Length: 113
Image 1 (cartoon, rainbow, N blue to C red):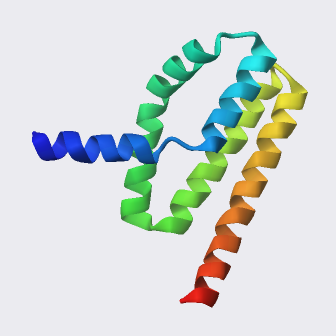
Image 2 (cartoon, one colour):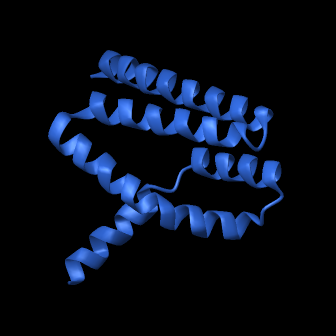
């Protein structure tokens, strides 16, 4: 049980990222929903998606997991479009930058190692 708690805490700290915080802010501002409430409810709703992402990665590899992530970003943008077209565009731009970042990171690490 101790190992599970330690590993779970490490995972919890790992999945926190500026992209998530930025998107939470964009969505909260576009909907006039309390930022903390949105973060808590959205985090709870995200648990099944995180499990699917891990299973996709484990079975099919990084590219499939990245494709799943892009799909969820696009679905998020479509959902947000109902609230705010500006937020939809911001979501798409962030998704594009994430995809570019993955490619650049791979390229740069390949040059170093």
